[in-house]
Length: 476
Image (tube, rainbow, N blue to C red; front, side):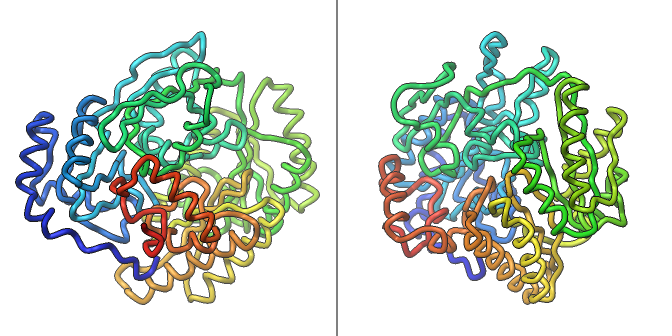
C-alpha cells in the first residue's frame, strides 16, 4: 500500500472534459451530472481515505436505462468508469482517477417488489443494506448480511465486495443471499442474471459477479433472499484473560459442530474503546471478549448456550453475561457495531481485512500484536471470529508521515501473515488498491493471468474500475 502509484491522467481526456460533460447531460437529466470542482470533492475518496483523486465528472442516474446510456457513451468515447455505491469501501475500491467518470447508484434506492411467499425481494442497487430489513420487517422478515456500515452501505456495493457481517456465520455472506442481478455491461447492454428461482441454469455468473469489485459492469438491481425472523435471539458476553484463550474457544466451538448465529471478538484495546463509547457493560478487566449470539426457541437457545459455556469454561473464561432484555441485547450489539466509529474518536487507523483458518486464530492474533509492536504502534482487534475474518485496526497519527508509512507496512505484514497461515487477503472488504500489490503473495502469475482473462471477457479495455485489484505491472 505504501507508495501506491496511479497512472497519470490523459491530457487529451482532461482537455475534452467540457465535451464529455455536455454529452452526458444530453443523455440524462442535467442535475444528475456533477462537474463543479467543489461538488466533486466528496467523490475523490472513500472510507479508505488514504488516497484522493478528483474525478473528471460524477453521474447519479435514477434508472437502469440511464446507466445504460451513460456506459454506452463512455464505451464509445473511451472514458474509464468507476462504479460507486455509498463510498463506504475500506480498501480504496471507489477511489477514481482524474480521467474517469464516477457512476454512482445512490439515487437508485427503490424497493421494487417483495414476494413473501417465495421469500425474495427485488431492490435497486442504491438501496441501503439496513433499509431492506426495515422494509420487510413489519411482515416478520429480514435480510441476513449485516456489515457494520449497513446503515449507509448499498446493496450494489455489498455485492461488489461480497460483504458479510456479524451474522454471516450462520446465514452466509452476500453471495449466499443473492438470487438474481440486473447488470449493465461496458457497452451499455443490459443483461439479467439469475432471478427469483432458488437455482439458475448454466454457469454460476452470480458467484463470479459477487466480489468482482465493479470490474465487470454496473449492477443496477438485485433479487435478494429474505428470511423469517427467528423466534428469539440471545447474545452472551464471554470475557477471557487473553486473546489466545478466546481464539482457542472459538476454534473448539466451531470444531464441536456448534453454529451460533454470530461469534464476534474484541481484544482489550477494542473493549476499552467500545465500552467508553457505547457503555454496553463490557467486562473491562478482560483481555479479550467474545459476543456469541444464539437463536431459536427458548429450549434451543438454552441447549446451545449450555454447550458453548462448557467449552468456554475449558478455556478459563472469566466472565459470562447473558442479556436479559431486548435493551441489554441492543447495547451489546451497539458496542460491536460502533467499533470502527468509536475507534476513530481516539485515533486514526487503518482497518485490515484478512481471513485465517480457525485453528490458526490464536497464533495469528499473537503474531499480529508482535508485528504492530515492532513498528512502535498499537492495534485494536475486532472481527468476525466464527469464520476467521479478522479486522485489526492499526492505530497511528495521520499527521505524522512516518507513522503512516509504519502503519501501512504493519498492515501489509499482517495480511502476509494471514496468507502464510493458510488464509487469504480479504474476507469482505475487497482488494481495491489497498491489497493489489499483495496479490502476488496470494496467487501465482498463471493464476492472476487466468483471472485477468475472465475479466477481459466483460471488459477487454480494462476501463471499469481501472488500477484496482490487479498489480499494476500485471496490466495487459
